[in-house]
Structure formats: structure tokens, C-alpha cells
Image (cartoon, rainbow, N blue to C red):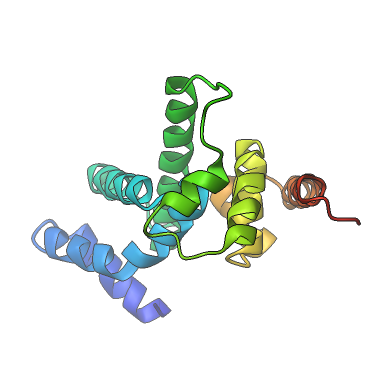
Length: 181
């Protein structure tokens, strides 16, 4: 979306008479992008759909708090990330880890919407073992090629700490996969 379109959409969002219609446009414009951001964090299709829905519900509820200082997508992305991390935390708290649990790779291979191979499933398993922040930084950088400067705005942290998190994440994933440096 170019700057002019973004300005038009944000002005429609700011007007109570056009807000609902404008928000429907936002949902259509950003659903797919946000879905894939969320999916890389929560992994399964059903969970990603739930988190995406929660993202838009939260965005609609907080629309009056949007200050138009950042891009609309940056604001939505931040909400999606927080919703994804909240989902993961709740999931970890709800599921006691035991030896009979399916591995992430096995869960993905059983997911009818997963279209990757065993190597991709193994990579996703390695990513899922990262701490939340490292996982998030890795996914944003590796899959979406988000620049550290943009990531810094979204995650509200320094570029240096993001670079360190990414480097550590890559090292852990490489070790998990048995790759040499």
C-alpha cells in the first residue's frame, strides 16, 4: 500500500461515519500478510486463524488509541505479534510437557494445511524451541526479511539487541539441525 492509499484509509478510519467500512478494508488488505506472520509463530493453521481473528478484534477495540504516528501495518503487526506470543504462553501453561507428546515436526506433518516436507518440519521444530523473542526475531528476519530498523520500531528495542538475538537464534537452530558453522 502506498503512502497516499495509507493516508486515505487512515482518514476513513478516523471518521466515525466511515470507520466500520474502512476497517473492513483494513481486514481485506492485511489479513493474508498478518496470517503468515502469525502462522510462523504459532505454526498450525487453526491456531493462526484464531490468533488472526483475535488480532483484528483487538485492533478494532483499540482503534481509538491508534495515534497515526506509525504505519497502519506496523501497528497491526505489533498487535499480531503480541497476540501470537500471548497464545504461545497460554499454550505452554496449559500443556504439561511429557514424553508422549507429539513433536512439533510430527504435529506439522499431521496438519492438513502444512505443505512443507520433513526438512521444513524439522526446521520449524528447531524454531519452536527458541525463546519467544529469538523466535520472533528469527522469523521476521529470515522469512520476511524485515530490516532491523523496522523491527526496532515494531518491537521497541535496539537494533543491536535484535542482531544479537538473530545471531543466537541462528546458532541454536544450526546446532539443533546438526549443521556446522
